[in-house]
Length: 114
Picture 1 (cartoon, rainbow, N blue to C red):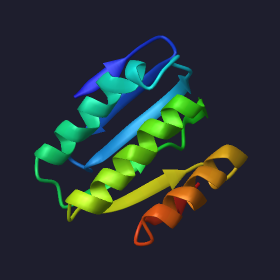
Picture 2 (cartoon, one colour):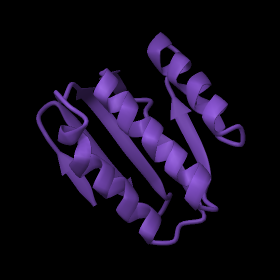
Picture 3 (cartoon, rainbow, N blue to C red):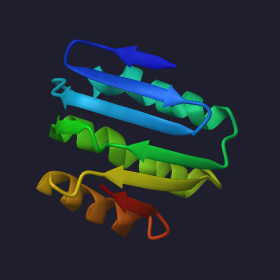
Picture 4 (cartoon, helix red, strand yellow):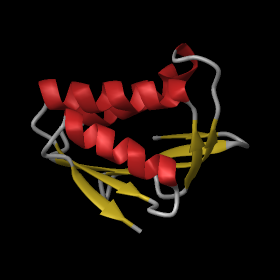
């Protein structure tokens, strides 16, 4: 499963159960993020027990994208038994802030930095 665009890529690697999001995500509304959200929810429908969300190659994410990721994490927290790991780039301050906020919403969220 993947969404490829000249500005960003969203790819699910089934072997590692990792969703890789890279590039620059500047979609105008939360509605515009729906295809990405659908892809991420389809991954959950596969019954994965462990899931890594790798943002380490994501240069920028606007507020609509942050809302989409936040809703996804809340959905996992409230509806799934998936062990979620967030892989971020600790050179990007916005990713550090996002990971802190997501850990507040989901205290058992694991975080890797690189």
